[in-house]
Amino acid sequence: MDLEALQARAIAIADLYDRRNVAAGRGAWSTGDLALGFAGDVGDLAKLVMAVDGRREIENARERLGHELADCLWSVLVLAERYGVDLPAEFARMTDGIERALS
Image (cartoon, rainbow, N blue to C red; front, top):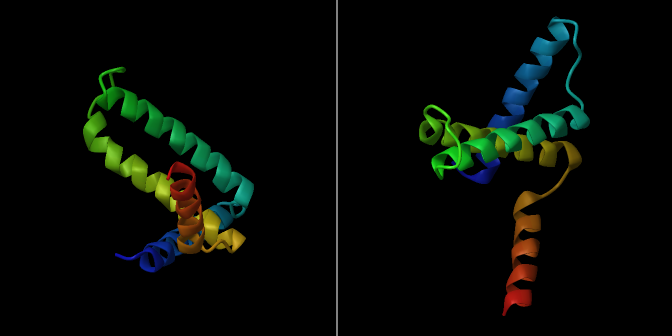
């Protein structure tokens, strides 16, 4: 799946979450809510990485790692869309800058 397809899928899921939250009387998530959710997912990812590396005890850490990475990617894709960020262009600009600095 290419980045455009991944982002379209992420947005479709975000829309489903929004509809569910609105129906439950909680309202759709703002970009701030998404960022806070992302921060929580990054924390969960860090704990799983520590467990996979033998620094913590978490059951099924290796099996759960891919899911948590995907959770983080989902958040990045949705935030990029909501803020109108062209991720491929920004990634290329960022990696070009790093490459120049390291060369």
